[in-house]
Length: 439
Image (tube, rainbow, N blue to C red; front, side, top):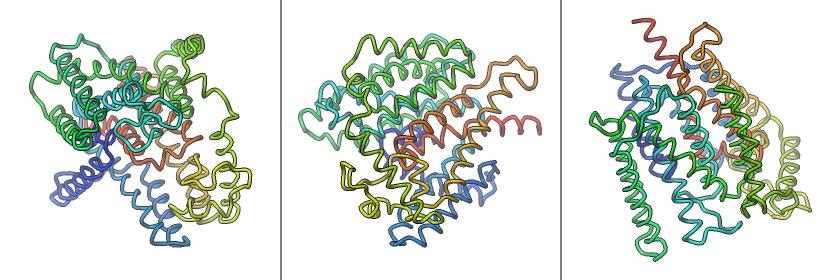
């Protein structure tokens, strides 16, 4: 699970391979009664969403292609696998340390691409190890929100050890070496693959280690490094939806931890506007071609829904159907998706499927909120410091929903996997509490 947490941020192929192995292993453990499948409040909406997606694929103009697109439903298994792996606080933090390590790698590589490899224009933005810059910016958003929650809700923060600093220096050296290979166009792809394999192994070793590293300061240290690096990478990404999602996600965490921290958000925005960095100032407009194209996409999406409101066009069919619904004023003749989660799901799979999806997200956010409130003692009179996982889940889900108003990030496998991984944290807290009551 730690290897999946790391690779879903840098390589979807590696993450899929590891997820397949994890599913097989979990099935074996279920058969041999070494594990049990826990019931969640999300079971109902996940089942309804999955069934309606398959029905929509069956009524599609191209059922084979739609069923092939619907195979992403398998990714929901990650929620249950993560819940099984998050047995206690130490296991949760060790696995999430792997995700934060990969988040540092993702953001740092984006910065190297921007400053040294020419990924510095609007049409050629840094994408790190991934296939698209919007995926990279969405994951930087998620890592930033989770890292802030990790620090603000930490019970204690210790000074990083010498091993922490030496491992970070080694990581920086390897990334510099990879950047050099890419600049020289010499074994760049092979170097990336070897690095991803090494990162996966490192995350697994961190989760299983009982030695001096990682220590109690490693997780907060990775969070402290991830925050400025991810924020910097997010800034140069020029992705406005991710910027708005980040502000909302951080605002939610600030409200949960200390509402006074909300003042830091407008102060930070004001500081950026005063410094006027070009990647930000150039994107503060709604008259650009991408903004206009989105408006016409959304209008076409509404027409698609009105035409087929029950089962939609079919999963994966938006690109094929778009020319029939495209408005003449739209700048681009085609689009792979509608750049909005709700419109995309309704147009692809019908309005009932949109209802199941909204139920799923609302249930996950509500459970994360209740778990945070329970831990802070607002309901039971306790005064304990709340675990950071529930707040991180609520902040990340809020950020993904807001950025999903302008991008179909629910259909991005990397972002969906990372979101499901973090969304399992509140349920693992509840399961751990239930086991403690039984014992």
